[in-house]
Length: 226
Image 1: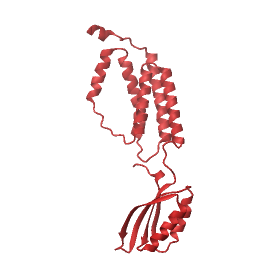
Image 2: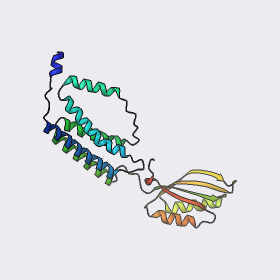
Image 3: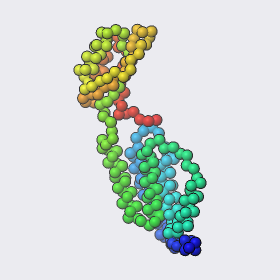
Image 4: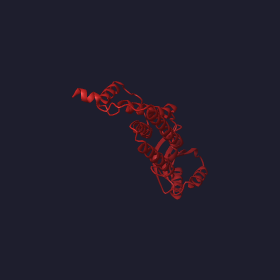
């Protein structure tokens, strides 16, 4: 039984076929990495992750070629990989998906499933581009946070509430605290606008209020994880 496991599927690839596997894995993983670069959104850019997609695809292709159909080789390689502890933390699940796609392409090329590798990589890249250009998963661009400091008293709060009611679809007070020894009140409002361009009119009306200072607006669609 042991002799059967060791000898099963030990047929080696010729040099041309092995080179074709590596070249196709390199080209397809490079395409996946290029799509990741074009569709990336955020501030935590990692050049090492981009290169890891290509290099990881080549490694997975190498492993599949080395294993072939040999069960004993596969068990040995899995056991050796289990010793290595990968401690790299990927903060964005999308990074992990792209890395896994590159590894999958390398595996498909290593087992000589060239059509599956090419079609799979093409569909994955197309889906990534369509999702990035569409509004799928994007929060409302009219959501924002308005923050300012107003003089203490009931009258300023009523005037601010009237302006927000007239220029927003919905608003809610998030935080309010006394500053400057109680002379001013720091307020933060969560607002939903009817149209993104309404923010200009809203800010202009708030700036005309006497005593209002530190007026800022943060569009929540532009916030990213650093």
